[in-house]
Length: 499
Image (tube, rainbow, N blue to C red):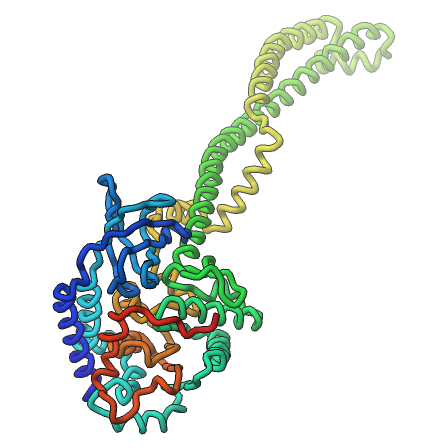
């Protein structure tokens, strides 16, 4: 069987499972006995819901929570289930404690979304990267029992690697070593485990390995859902949640944008003020230059009057030959008086012009004065504006939408940790691509979900798990491959991860 055929077969089986969900009562409303808030992550809230009977719900199922007293309902997602408790992440707060909340699950929608994803992969294989996924055919095709032997013989191939060992600590150590190497090669990794608790424990183990390897695990690693454990392997897990990381990043971004807007507005406020001050300073310099010219002319006239007074006073004592020379150019005792009257008559208008200029100078001096702290502030703001690309770029940044780009943020993470159900049913992963898929406890993961996740991988797949969980020839292949009919809908078994 070829890969598109197997994808179509799995899509049909998931569609059949959707039709059976109603008859099984999986979408029936469920009354809770109480809801206790146990944490928050960004804009999401984590609640432990007590249920009166064993529930058939399983992880990754979306549901609607209807609080009492006509409070608006909110959307949620099942993260973990036990016999009498569900751990759910919600988009709205229900309060610290709430009772009589009604849960309306959407199991049929879960199977329908997964079926549509596989059908889309079968119909449009060119939109996915199905090369590595084809290496899973001998493992997942229920009609190729003999293929398991061949697959085990080729387990060391570069595209498909398997790690089988009954001791989880041994497997996880090998997986952590691979992940550290892949991260150093700048590969994008999708890390999967069958249930949220195993996902959290494995994430803590990997984070510790990255920390030991001197790698910034907080910026490299992201848990797509809200972690259900508070810590693992000595690593606080809530800070590794995707929602918490994105909320912190965009909160900081908004704070930076607010600070930038404040700086830009202050820059726009100071620019015309300083331009006005600069123009007034230019006018002040012109008026001072005019005053200097008027004062120089006044000083010249006063000097000439002083020389005339001195000449008249000493005229009789001047030698005759010098007086004759003065008379030759029209300077005698009579004409000197006329010159003196002429120069003296020019002084009053000059004094008026000087007074006008000095009054204008006093006005301009106050208008052109820049407060001593304003100029350094403007210079700092201008330097920052230039560094960011100028005012057009600043306006573009401030006008950009505030909506968080979840895909872009998740693509910046080197290691994304989640469950196969979320990969197949969350529309965000429809557009995501990874270099490597690492699957822990692979035999416990439903074949359709494993194949759906493998369709997002470009280069390599690594599967690990207990050797005793491997399908053995002679068993019911279809029942083994479609194990999600038994495992996913049955009460949960204790986690096999490392505490």
